[in-house]
Length: 223
Ligand code: AP5
Image 1 (cartoon, rainbow, N blue to C red):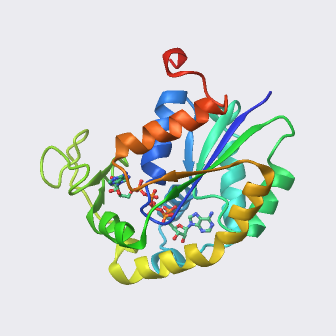
Image 2 (image 1 turned 180 degrees about the vertical axis):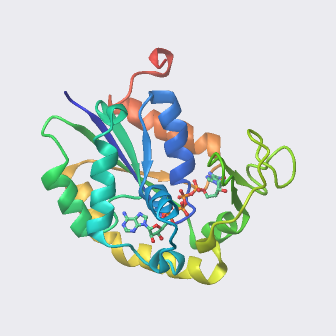
């Protein structure tokens, strides 16, 4: 079966999680964040990962193992949306050698955002530790201060969202993503979206490009 495989990448806080969740809801495909897979993994074994908390990458072997397990689940068989993977050339090669099928329809979506905007977004980000819903103090506030709209749980900040760690994460991103962008561009599978607009406009732009490329049906046909 030809699967639709979408990759979201961009600097930390650029909106990958926000936009992949929107698209997941509209297309009925799972949005799979490798950051979330790792957080769930470490929570389930009662540990913290020092590399994550310091803004460094986790081992390729662990990431690839968690990803393959997730992709084997029934909901990912007709396609999936990846948020934050691949993050280096080793992961890129692993994916293209082991996971991709020749008839898969592929698109890599870069959400382009300045370092200054990243810092503002990360500083205001909050999440619900119970249901995972995401918020922003300014751009996407919860109805009741500090409480999740869906389950009323007290909202939290991610441990790796400190000002020091964000500098590390940004620097790492700028260092490692260049070769991947070139590879996707050479394969003709790259689109670059201006991520500095508001959430709805960014989403509209992503959907329009995917529709132009015939990768998703026109809006009127999406259920
Ligand atoms: P991960 O969880 O993937 O973090 P990240 O890439 O740094 O990205 P973020 O989740 O911080 O941001 P986002 O782009 O999803 O933005 P969001 O939508 O939340 O990875 C965490 C760590 O795990 C890594 O550092 C690494 O250690 C490890 N890891 C993960 N994958 C790995 C891999 N493949 N290999 C090795 N290690 C790996 O938006 C941010 C905020 O802005 C929110 O509050 C949102 O409401 C708001 N917002 C979003 N869009 C807009 C907009 N257009 N306008 C205004 N506000 C907006």
